[in-house]
Each structure stands twice: as C-alpha cells, then as structure tokens.
Image 1: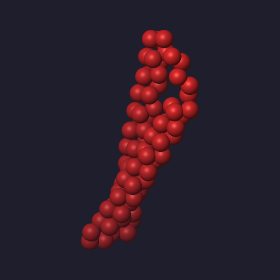
Image 2: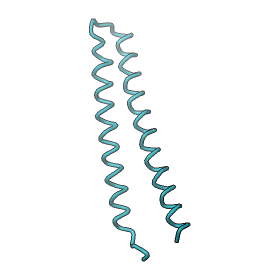
Image 3: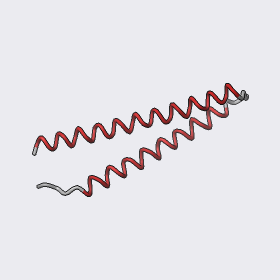
Image 4: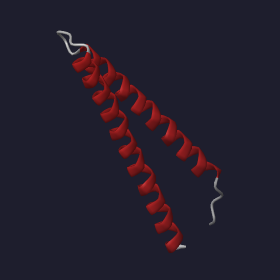
Amino acid sequence: MNQEKRKNQLNNWIKFSNIGLQMAIIIGAGTYFGVWLDEKYPNNFSAFTIIFSLLSVFAALYNVIRQVKNISENEDDTPNKN
C-alpha cells in the first residue's frame, strides 16, 4: 500500500511539473511572437508584445485550470482501496 501511495505522489508531481512547463512554453511563445511582430511592424508602444504576452498568460491560466479540473475529476473517479 505504501508503494502505491508513493507512485501516486510521483505521478501527481510529474503532472503538475508538466503543467508548469506548458505554462512557460505558452507564455514564452506568445511573448516571442509579439516581439517578432513589433520588430516587423514597429510602433511606439510595443503593442504587439504587450497584447500577445497578456493573451498567452490568459491562455496558459485557462490551460492550467482545465488540466487541474481534469486531474481532480480523474482522482474522484478512482475507487478508494481501503
């Protein structure tokens, strides 16, 4: 039983660290795209960088909420072996 608990904790750790990595990739890609657009179409306020970095943050947060909800639902569906 202790072995199963450790395996479950490791699986949860992997899932949540994966979510953090996905957040970093989404935000980094959105910001990079905004910087690229600002270099291609210059403006006074770096508007593309601001817009795409904010949109990518919201997209990353939506992704986190969706995945945590999914993980929570999957844990609720598994029967307790007590």
